[in-house]
Length: 279
Length: 156
Image (tube, rainbow over all chains, first blue to last red; front, side):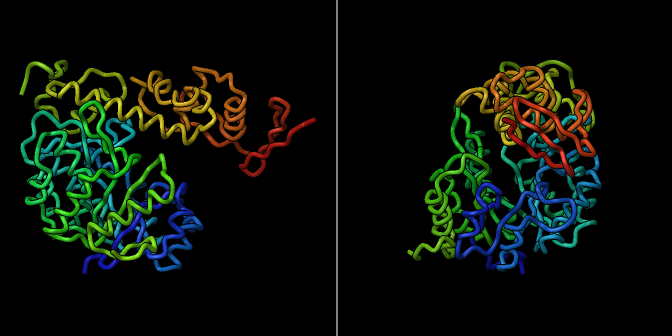
């Protein structure tokens, strides 16, 4: 049984929208940025209330740098493991990306060259991480505006090899699939036919916007209709066990966020969590 | 693909993944030369996006400083200053910006004074939390550090 089976539609919990999240009547799971959880002691009170109400909390790491050639920082791994224990998480997630090298922080997720050397680096860092975790790890492929010049593998080959060699689950971000395909001039549905979708733990959906001919995965704009359509295509192939809306700033009025959550329910067939009537 | 629209400076052929990753991140955020073969326009778009995200992160840590740039101006003003400077985390990035561009806005000055009350920062190494109680005067207010927290009292 996959860890989030039956959890349906969730939302990325952020302090700025904790009041909104607390009032979602059908909510069964949230994500929390792992690095935002305290290093010791209890989780924030608002999260503790969700936990008490039976909502699953998934720590989502953004600074581990699993794709770095350098070994992951043991303190960061220990914090992720501790965060998972503190919220009784059914799983944790991180990215197939690097965020620092040689002591320089990028400040965001950077893409890896799709090389065998990079696969080896990810596999080694995932092993170092899962050795400390009590729960499964799901890996998320990122959106990037550029690629490395000398890729040896296709994206599907690269991701499939990492998943096979690590036993990790897949956190598929459908907006990232859309963004990468659009920016490379490819068909986004094409990647869906080549990924091991049966490994999906859950799916991310987020907003973005076109800027100077490129699609930016901003998490601060509305979810485009094309992304929802692609989500529908994914569900036609394989419905993900659970789906989560990410929003990271420029928070819209509650009605707009509720409408986006209801759109995820409509696309996946999972029950509305906003209290909206089923249509 | 090589040639037009591709970067061309220090070659990275044969270099290990660690070196290539460091070269790229230094080029993206710290003003170093871009390694060979990348799509220059796509990398430039990434640099702009990284600066925007960094500006948003700093604005969350330094809301008054960000507001002091004027409505809708923070990302532009901060990005112009931060381009080519390696990120040091939101606390230090905002602090360095404030030291290089002392705010004239009183709310931003107060924000900086409160940071200085709680943290010791030499402009070179990571800020350290100050210890023990202390009090300072700032613009007609008494700023008191007590058990690691700031308390403020308006003086008449």
